[in-house]
Image (cartoon, rainbow, N blue to C red):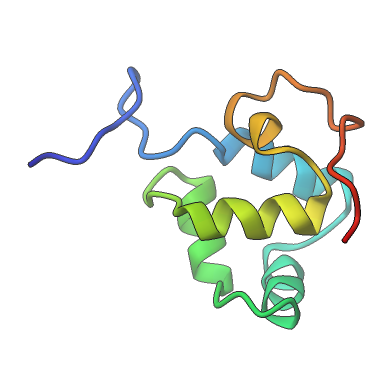
Length: 91
C-alpha cells in the first residue's frame, strides 16, 4: 500500500511550522535534537533535517515530542492555523 502524501507530494505537514518554531526559539537542528534526547525522545539532527525537508514521515510520538518541546498544540504543528501563543499547559 502506498504511503500517503500531501496534495503537493510532501511526506509531512509540519515542516514549515517546525522550521518557524526552531528559528523563533533560535535553536539549531543539533540543539533541538539535544533537547529532544534530554526529554527521552530518540530523535537526532538527521531526523529533524529530513522532517524539515519533507523527506520523512512524522510519527505520533514525534508530534508529541515536538509539541512538548515548543509548548504548542498538535493543531499548530499540523496546520499552522492555531497561534503559537495557544500553547499546551506545562506538565
